[in-house]
Picture 1 (tube, rainbow, N blue to C red):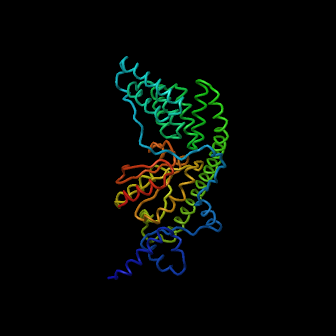
Picture 2 (spheres, rainbow, N blue to C red; picture 1 turned 90 degrees about the horizontal axis):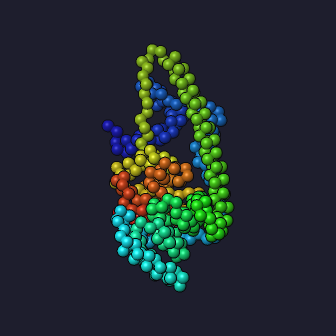
Picture 3 (cartoon, rainbow, N blue to C red; picture 1 turned 120 degrees about the horizontal axis):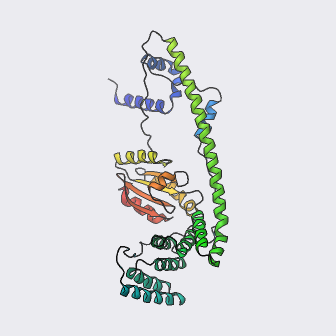
Amino acid sequence: MMDDDKLEDLKHFVHLCKNDPSILLKPSLSFFRNFLESLGARIPPSPEKGEEEHLDELDEDIIESDVELDDTDTVEPDNDPPQQMGDSSSEVTDENRDAAQISKAKALDAISEGKLNEAINYLTEAILLNPSSAILYATRANVFVKLKKPNAAIRDADAALKVNPDSAKGYKVRGMARAMLGLWKEAASDLRLASMIDFDEEIAETLKKVEPNAHKIEEHCRKYRRLREEKRLRKIEHDRKRRQAEAKAAYEKSKKKEQQSEHEASDPDSASDSNEGKIVGIHSVSELETKLNAASAASRLAILYFTATWCGPCRFISPFYTSLPGKYPKVAFLKADIDEARDVASRWNVSSVPAFFFIKDGKEVDRVVGADKNSLEKKIAQYAG
């Protein structure tokens, strides 16, 4: 029997061969290669001259450059608990509707006096009395914008648009809030819709600030979509040539070994690499499910970070996120670009970036939205134990 140390060395060597079968082409390992072939194994052929460099080129990720944006008016995301919302299924009586109007009038007086928090309280009273009024949600959203609380404003604007999909004020306020978060494309889309429904000068002024950034991002996305498509086509061509080379090698081998019984043997899938101390890029739903299943099997916390190359707050938080695997080696750190992995972002209903989802046993247990370093690390310490 082989002792434990030598057995571990053998396991390590097999692992290396699975990751890079070209190791077996070394002259010093010809004895081992001949032994594997005698068992019916198929050793991948040696890459043709120049192909190794091409493989390296295909494996390289497309590193997107930063977009030069004007982030002058952006703010740090607000992470307050969600504000009170009315029950949209409840029936609104005439008495409640009149009382809501009185609370709204008090709110407008408070706004004119600069008492914005007091106005929020009055508008909340009005919404609870009349949750079917889109204008009440939109008005409170506008106050949240004045208070520089864009996430709260977006929640109210969404509620307004749910009640009335043609609410110009709902689109307008949500566009202004998204601009405060640096979500330039989404902001431009909302403001354009608001302008089509009910144009006003404030929308026009905000669009003048938002559209230059939105156009830069749109051009940036078109450029990298084109580069990714070119890379995909190169990979398809490379895979076609590789399959041809493998078929040719298999045919020549069968001719040389006519007296041997020929059988097909496929290498088992490589064992999943240890990703401890690393951040793993996610590009598809199936890839994410594989990583989450592996984390669940190992009883590990997984953190899924949604980002975007054009997102200012993402650029602020990314270096900090990159440093976390070294501090929490037993946590699976994952990262997905919402423009590249659109199916993943859609599956997790991502509406704002940066966003961090805490996942255990395949289920979300918590999340952090925004570039809040303290909340992020506090929750990692809470769930990683």
